[in-house]
Image (cartoon, rainbow, N blue to C red; front, side, top):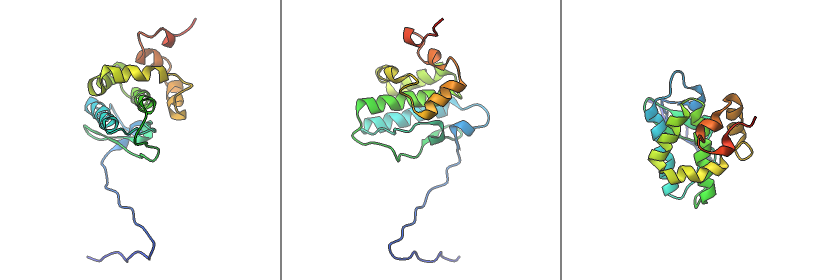
Length: 159
């Protein structure tokens, strides 16, 4: 077996492990609920460590057979504020709800994060606050806000 040539001085090599998974928006067929629950468990771990991902759009959620991988923490923040973590929650709720029943997404979030953490995100669940990817997801799925916030009069359609 041959070895690759050595790197020139002052160079760096980035090695990444192959993950047998696809971005959420590219998954063919139904997204397993086990992967949805795992995505929320990953967010819960980040938040318990004081970290916010800050870019939880569909392209950054890889879905495997029964698990999820949150990738690209380039915008991540350690010592994250409660607002940054709440925005993580709503961005992931919207991203997952493009492929999974919103009620199942909210139930999994509440189970893994707690009802209070989900409720803390609700004020940010509006188009003006969501990322560009989140707003695009809402445009592609009319009524999603109503499904994600069923008891909130502000989310109900206006006549």
